[in-house]
Image (tube, rainbow, N blue to C red; front, side, top):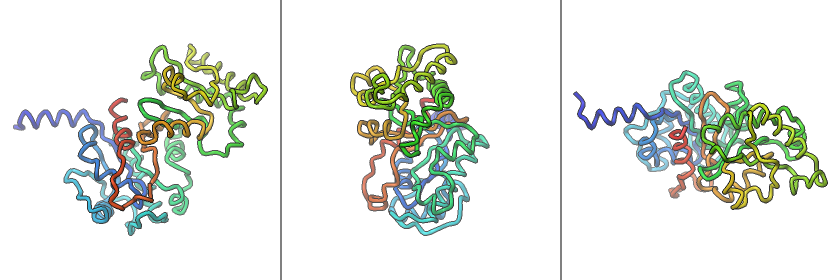
Length: 324
């Protein structure tokens, strides 16, 4: 018969979500984050690392970090390769994409409750022949769903209407009122259970001064049309009128709004990273699974250099699974 203490531990473990962690680019800092923080995260989730034994041992030896006894891994990912710290290589791209595919496979088989992704290098994916620019693009195709990219921390989250497209194309995307309205509806549906009843989502305009009634641009007219369509579907007003972008993230505005929708990548991420760079995370919404990621890159400048890493983004990305 198990002891009362052991029984309590088993009950706690059964309540934990099992999360597949794709290991990212092994030439970067992801594996160090995984090894160094395992004993912390295993207290809140049941992690399964998408890395095989050979590559794990190689990384462990290079980092001089021992592998925890309960560090659960999968048996096979992709062809083994020699880790080259801080270098962009095809082999690392192949492996990181295969690790991600394994995490997706486990989620589709319902063997895990979510996916957490460590940082990849987009150029390595390109060298490996991967057609996607990043995790979110891939997830849209894998699940045939319009995934929404939301980044932030518990203090502030920003959803991006457009992501990795040239700036000159953003205006045309905004003129697609139906697409924008569907985005606004989907975003609200994904966060409505954690949105305060009286709180509105901050909806950013595109132009300086939010267009100044058309003097500086008319995209805000299209944004308002999409907003009205969304409100009719939702049944109530949940979005602000288009906010002037240069004051949307001021302290007074952030007292009123914790969730924002930005029209393009840097409009939302520049202020977010200025305020909460060390703690921000990336979350993929509007999918049948939950996926989180750190909001930083492979950090080749410090990879395998025995540098103490800032783990706050990683821990926040893990902790998000306890709130959903």
